[in-house]
Amino acid sequence: MTTTQDPNRAHWVAVARDEPVDWGALATEPDGVDDAPVDDPAGLWLHPGDELPGAAVLAVHGGGFVSGSVRTHRRMFGHLARASGVATFVVEYGLVPGHVFPSQLGTVTAAYRWLLDGGARRVAVAGDSCGATLALALAVQARDDGLPPPASLLLMSAWTDLLATGASYDGARDPFFTRPLVRGLGAGYLAGTDPHDPLAAPLHADPGGLPPTYLQVGADEALLDDSRALARRMHDAGVDVRLEEFAGQVHSFQMAAGRTRVADDAIGRAGRWLRSTLVP
Image (cartoon, rainbow, N blue to C red):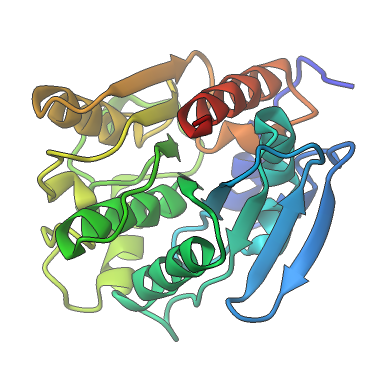
């Protein structure tokens, strides 16, 4: 049952205090979703039942490139799979410092090719935070390398500017993300790569020709301007882009799916939109 409390904000307050947290427990267990682990590529299928044939969602978890996993995001992406009625594959990738750019992008791209080779005729890509970074970079790389493009992109609390230049860092009511912290996370991922590299920080990529994109972002989060700047660039390039800001919400608020009305509303909107982009 949903509540009006905000366990997601409480989570980030606890993280800021260096208190133990269980990110994977933020969402409730989604009803009617079966999971099936995959060894190669490493990840997890989420099957909502009565699935849209010939379609799949590739889901990419967040965590600042230093944390997060299939386990932490299984429930949220399960709610998304149920809302969309589309089989969803959550991909696992290596974390900093053992894995740095472009390792994560290579893993996500390999999973995308695997879905296409496995018979999915239409694949949407969804991600939160740095998962959105990778989802967008995948679409840019597919376009530039001549791969079949994703049908659409769902980007939640997208991290697109690794230098954290947005003014939203200055006025946000964000309990955790600060400009120095985000710049440090970005530096760890880049490992010396130019922070303007379009595949590492896709805010700087040419958005022309990218697929329809839906951005969801919390109006109180420090990364708000990352989504706003990307949406402006996409709009100016003629991309079919939609941006929704959710009042009072902070980073990756959809992780509280099943516990808050706003998370359920956002997941419902995202699921319906994803399905509309995947119907033949």
